Length: 109
Image (cartoon, rainbow, N blue to C red; front, top):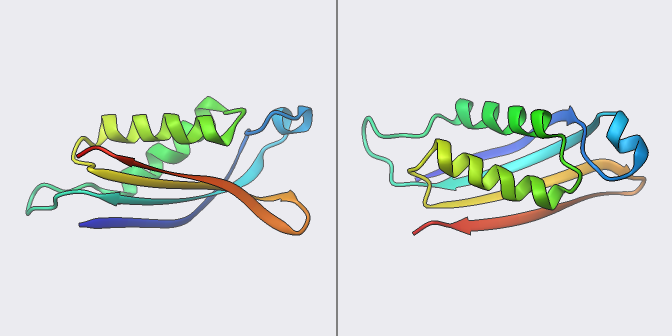
């Protein structure tokens, strides 16, 4: 089974530039979770989104690459059913004519 979370959008402190350390900026996160669904054995996607947002806000990452690593570890710890996890983090407003970001896939098979 796959859970798809697309365009989870909120503001947080993220980045290495001086103004990024003091002014929250918008991030957009996509997350795909593969896991072995069975009746009564599922992952609550609302809890996943809450954990992602809370982790991003609490940690105030400097690099989005570090954010991906920590989110991957945190999600797997809280949801051990995860077999594969793909995360994308984008900063849509950091450059004037594009959205930039990073993506990472983790396999736990």
